[in-house]
Length: 219
Image 1 (cartoon, rainbow, N blue to C red):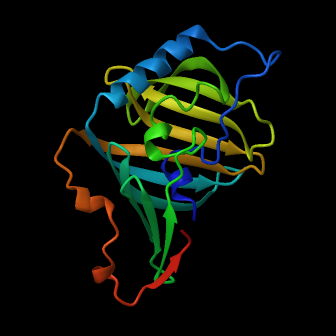
Image 2 (cartoon, one colour; image 1 turned 120 degrees about the vertical axis):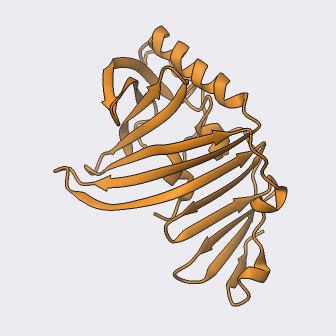
């Protein structure tokens, strides 16, 4: 998948807007749980998470899988996933495609509608979704609280998102995105470490390591 912000979790290209009247009410219990997850994530100075991505068709047949690592520090992030790397120091973003040996450079947008990995793990749900609690589910042998989110904007390519939350740690362990074309994307957090030392250089693309890479500067 080329859009790695989607690959980490999840709900890329969400546009922020106020919830229209007549769209239904949100579940207060679900909001309390999601608010707890958001607050817990915001308390971390740094986050390193390993994750897996599984892609299935409408019949449940696995079409592909990938694994990756995301590092977060303030507004900085770095994502490594099979075949791709993306870096951001908070001002500039570099996306490196290994197969084409090509790196694209962009300025980081700072508008309220810009989606970053940090926003994905915090209160992305507030204005863009209706949400409710589902019965608990088992994920990796552990009992998780499941939250079902439905996008308010019906033009989105997905119609439902299931977020499974570890109630003990108040962290997202798995997210499943259901697309209208029948495909399903499951993102599972394998492990997570927080508040470890991450040097700023980790979030900057080092051109010296890729001397033959084609550079496409879109700034």
